[in-house]
Image (cartoon, rainbow, N blue to C red; front, side):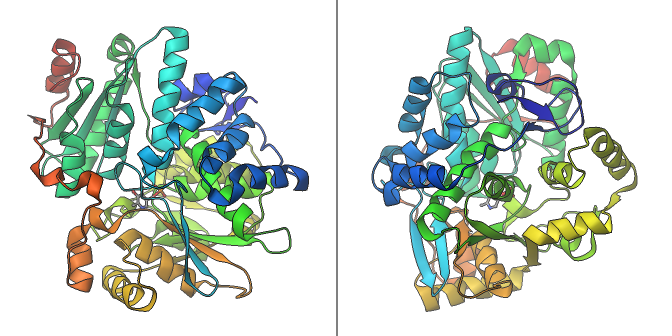
Length: 473
Ligand SMILES: *Cc1c(COP(=O)(O)O)cnc(C)c1O
């Protein structure tokens, strides 16, 4: 399998290269040259590997799917990496992604049982193991630098803590993450982890991280690398849980639809990829909060940037969804040059309009809906009353939009549970009047010591710190 860039760069690369590179040299996102096809026989094989979610089934399914995308890691090693990643010890349950019925026809696939209580662990834990393996093979080290508004940073830190060949430095906006989110980062005391609280906004953090990458001498000296959601390996790892749910509930005559709480479009893009591969998947519903650029696109065909509004579902507070470019690549008939032009114009004008044919194609697969904060609180309360499930604000939006956009009631609809309610205790308490408890593994989170460096919004100070202490503590 070779990978290409969405912006038309001529190079074709293998998996391990793009794993470490993240973004393509022309600023595009990597995609496989074509989607491997899973026919009826292969699907039956996947179903047997998964074995209804019995112990070891998820790891076996992950190995089968990853093998279709990775041909530069020996099969036995890849299998061992999957088995090491998807364990009850890491994900709190032998099923890894338990599937529960919410009401007739509606299911919840819970992806939030990993170490940081959000779905990002599903891919990030695998990435940590893949990095270690590939870096050991090449006898290299890297420094991961990233900016976070909350969930990505903690998932990346958990995945990299204590690893031999990776240092990780995560910038977060001082005082602007939730306390749970901050503590999930700053209480990880492994010597290869550096937390930096920047006096500024999330955008300031992101600008600082980007500036480090754009300083080529600095980038090469520290061998900087990124693990943000544009890394193909994260999308690839997420294909596994869509296939798991589709294999379990669906068949060629009974395709399964998914409703996905969406921000950067990384999670739902993996559903699209699974569908392109031939898994029995029906419609894909994009659920947004009031930052609804994607819902407006599906309605009108126009993407237009707007200011970000802070909501109760902060992991979906985005202006432009970076992974949407991967879908656009297909809507542009995989013409990278044309897409590069369109992206440049989008950056310059703040608006992009799809052609009628492109919009029709997108609507053939996707639907979209939104829910504001008041609705989110209402749905958390209703879901608890009617189904007994305590949902976090992101998942509640998914559930509400799944009901708005139901479609054929005879087909199953799976809502993705992207976070544990205890990760957003303030919103949940506001909705139902009681504070969700942290799972046992994290019960002492509020008592653990924190370690963090506070820094001004100052590139020079950051670079100096990183030059003098390999990992700022
Ligand atoms: C990151 C995140 C999302 C959004 O996922 P994307 O892949 O960016 O669309 C939704 N919910 C939670 C809890 C998240 O952490």
